[in-house]
Image (cartoon, rainbow, N blue to C red):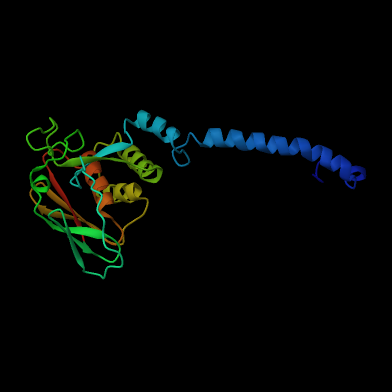
Amino acid sequence: MDAVLLDQYQNKPLLREYFLAFIEELDLLFGSIDQVYYGRMLDRAIGVQLDAIGRIIDQGREIVIAGGDLFGLVTEDTVSFPSGPDIGEEFVDDLRTYVWTGAEWMIASSERASDIEAHNMANKSTPSDGGSFKDGWYGNFFTVPLNDIQYRGLLKAKAGLHNRHCISHNQLYIAVSTLLDRTPRHMRLIYAGSRRLTLQVSSVDVSVVEEGIIQYFVQYFVPLGTQFSIERL
């Protein structure tokens, strides 16, 4: 403020407050403009702005990961458990045996026919489930919607590999580090045999879900016909 005021007006508090009223409005306007402009950039975009960038790169937020727990119909029962149980204490109700773990009652065994014979419902994300009524997408995979941090890493890694004729080892390491938004303390690519690659990563730095994300991303840097696996050490 002092830099734009003449010397004779720098000690006028009312005049300074009058000017600051306009300057604060301009600061709010400039902040909103910066948010709109930089929010369209991959490094700072969030939510639907990231989804819009994903459409440009042709990469959705929901990805299919192999393995994982299948889900479907769950029958909830109202059970009156005893109060004040000891750890390891068992309780039998309606042909089910529960055990107290110290935090909750867990089913230890069951002789109920419905527990043995019932099947979950199948859908696109759980195609192999459902007993006789399996989904047409039969296979062992499930759909995971990525959060903004995971999704941004996937978009940046995919954009970094686009339009490349070949990918070196260093580019693969960079892609995985970009995907995870960090570099694992152990990461090593091993030739396990003819057209067989294995990527070793530290289990301390890479979770099971992140391993699935890397496995999904393999399609962008491993040639067709090459068997690829991941080992968490």
